[in-house]
Length: 313
View 1: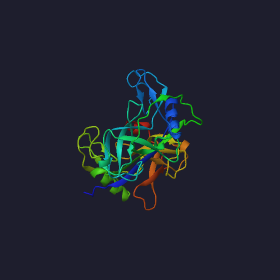
View 2 (view 1 turned 180 degrees about the vertical axis):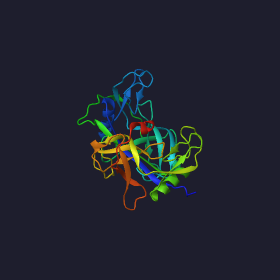
View 3 (view 1 turned 120 degrees about the vertical axis):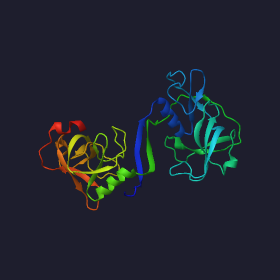
View 4 (view 1 turned 90 degrees about the horizontal axis):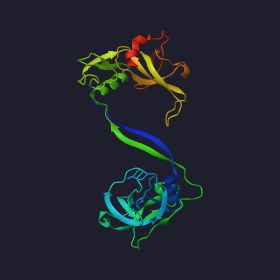
């Protein structure tokens, strides 16, 4: 049995959204050192503001300026800040009910240690030096001994309002493929394709998962299948991915390898994207020194008959 593999993996993408009038006013206000909330039908002031009343679901837009000071309602100490967190020194995560608001805002408190933080302590906003219209325009909160502030109506009008934001989403973790996929990857390094057969339905799964998705029973009988296969379905990719050196448009396809009962997905190359079709016979292309195929290309064989792969579409 091969050793179970593991490797660091990063999933990252930018999330882009447009802003309605309420969120636009809130983020533009932060850029201008102004904190806005929204008043609901029963008179409560919500900070951060929302576009619909959480109780009645009615649309709301009555903006209110609240103070940049407030009270900590609860907190948790973070002794080991991670990458891209607001502060690079130990800090407290805090919920702060700003003066004039009825709800609490989640942010961070710059404090020398957990002994300096308590529920009910007074704090104020420390503004970032460079502000762009984002929640990070509040650099953090800091202890404050002054008097409470109040709130006042606000028309939400600012010059050059922020109308959209881009939020990077990223997940760093260590991926372990398990026994079945480790064996599959080790075989690929030797330019062989190995799947596993279900002891009940006798289907061969490539790549293997260690269990049959149909019968729910464990699989351990290894079966070597052919490296060639048939395109069962495909899509044309028109958006270039970050850090991927492939020119668009290109094609990703589901490929049923000869002898397998499950299609895997891979990129199709060596043919114009608009000539890729269902039934196309393909074979793997290995980059020098690579442990897995770089892409699949046409074999030159006649297209497979639809009946030969229709169960795998």
